[in-house]
Amino acid sequence: MDQTTPQSQSAIVIIGSGLAGYTVIREIRKLDKAVPITLVTREPGYFYSKPMLSTALASKKEAAQLISTQADGMATQLELTVLAECDVSAIDADSKTIQTNKGELSYGKLVMALGADQIRLPLQGSAANEVITVNDLEDYARFRNAISGKKKIAILGAGLIGCEFANDLVLGGYEVDVIDLAPQALGRLLPEAAALELQSKLSAAGVHWHLSTTVQAIDRQGESLQVTLANGNAISCDVFLSAVGLKPRLELAKATGIKTDLGIQVNRELETNIKNIYAIGDCAEVDGLVLPYVMPIMQAARALAPTLIGQTTALTYPAMPVMVKTPALATIVSPPAKDAQGKWITTPVEGGLEARFESNDGKLLGFALMGAATAQRGSLTKELPPILE
Image 1 (cartoon, rainbow, N blue to C red):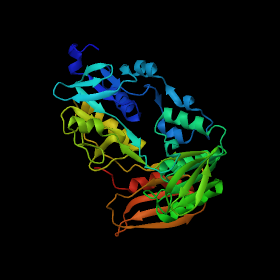
Image 2: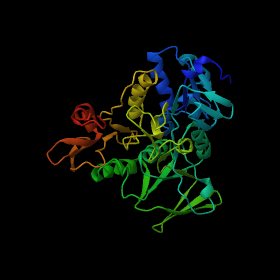
Image 3: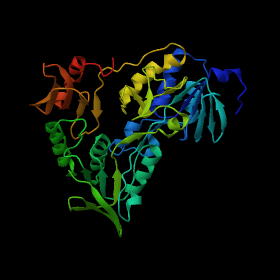
Image 4: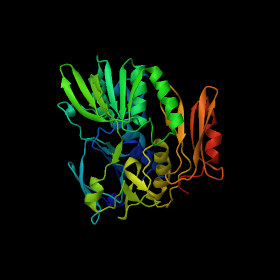
């Protein structure tokens, strides 16, 4: 790599080729066609929609069919340099360079769009090393290969990803068991009544629930896996998928002296404590918030792009409802803020359920809409306070 070009001082370098990385680049190109941009990624650099991983079976798509544009196509379309399968080992903030397995690269502004890893619980048993997690397209290809010709899948985790995969797998003809320590599905997002409604619809579709318990051990027994639960029950399955949540990738930031807590800490301009280094997406923490969803990423990219080309813009988050991709019961949720005071009020409606989280003086602070009630998404979202003003 040639480090001597005067352009390198104004160049924007982005680490990570997920939705956050590519969306920032799209937003920059709307504002500036000429600024040099280099995307560095340890992945192949293609663009695909990660949310489609948990709906691909029902939509009859193989892993490879989820790629919308290859790396060279993205490079042409967005007029950038893509350094694929390129690992970043260190950032030198003083010299404004990054070290990679393909050499040293200079930056003017550096964006860390590093994403997050699936949390892997330390599990016991002879088949603990056979547990699969799905965090990117290549993981998903391995998962699809593993379940091909098989029948029974167990999923650890009844959160968003676990429920979406469970629904997709039963639609694909698989028998599915879902295990979670929480007493209900989507424990962080839904009130109890709404969770019971979703569980009931997924049960009718073929999902078996094992709640308020966890996995004691996973052992290989011939062709099958034997899953021993803490409540004394046992499940037999062919493939075991862990979907217990995400943890932001912080190692590179920590090694660089960048402040981290839940995520890489950034201000409202998405800048870290080190000048000219920014973070966005699943790895970033803004005002104590790490929001690993599509809408916050789009919002952040629209704020960061102008900042990177000298038009400083502060990030704001409006209310951003999350769509849960469970065809068994359409669900849209906008959870109240963690410290919100108030209570859930749940009302069954024809063909669905409406749950409102209201403050003590009757203001709407959150909602969960299911089935026919999802039609109210637009009107109720307007009533909600912004997440970040």
